[in-house]
Image (cartoon, rainbow, N blue to C red; front, side, top):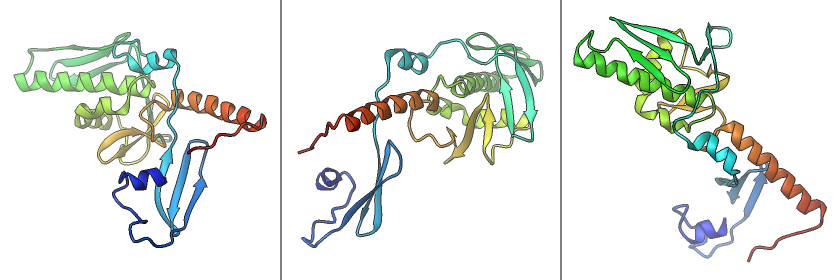
Length: 217
């Protein structure tokens, strides 16, 4: 924290007036620590995780098979829907799309105007990124270019995106108009991040139990 303030990373410097400053910290979890200056919260530091090559492969490859198979219609009780391989949707005006093994296939091009074809393309691209994201294979930012089309599509299926909603078991929400995974402040999908956190906890526990300590200077 002292380094962050001293280098101007926080945009402020409480030590500039050469006055006494009280710094405290709360360990919120294994990876999150909140820092306070004179009782006022300054920021929360998040510990970076290390990922195995096999884990990076699961979310670092653009073209990969979907995990989810089949389709379960909207459940209003859980505000959830399941969309996977084999799911088929009629988009109207002769357009349709089918979820294949690793991509979404569109049909009906040329039935409408050029604008209709482009809209179909965006819906297909949006569904492709949404499924990969919900299957814990993509960063949430991959859905950003298609957000409006994804939201329109989900609304047509009955999903209420004004509150927490569930796609393929992944709990989602809109944050600043963008689709995000609930409670995940890492870029990496939570299923992968949680494995890394578990290894981190085990490593730190071994250091503590072994009486090994590190001093930062």
